[in-house]
Image (cartoon, rainbow, N blue to C red):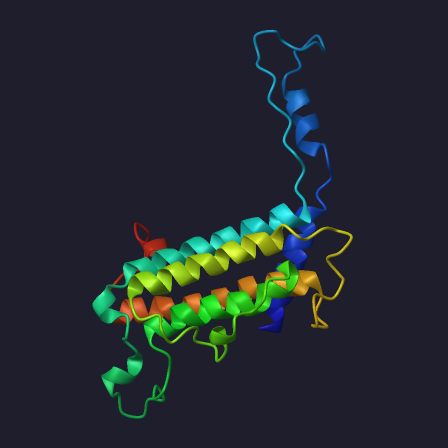
Length: 213
């Protein structure tokens, strides 16, 4: 898990520290003719804003958000209470593991717990315990909870700057950058479990469809 956190820290910082203006200079060079003058027949591309720590982190959140939401939507509602425990496999250690619905709600509740210190939002009392509100019973409720939690993640990413990313967030001793990246790493961990649950029910995860398994 520690290697995953280090990977995200390095990846995000590297993207954020890309030299400003590099894309603009390359585009300008591409429009030059042999005489060293710009060709009037070639359209000048609009300069792109250089990446920031906020935009780099937002992109990472968008990536895992799509995979998890697509997986959550792919599982039929009548399988939302599935867990491998129902297989009763001899020698297995599946007793008491989370159901698919609990995996979805756990990711969402954890997103709130991890990212709310960055935004200053209050962590709701009924999100305690790791599996989110017990009142959420349907697939639609779980997916809405999941999407709302990633909306908070985008809000959290937007707060990051190169000046504040190494500052502690809220009451936590963790840096703002660590919390932002840990939310992504944690979500990836549970996405892997969701994928296994889908395949146990004969469902190819959306991210793998059209590819060689």
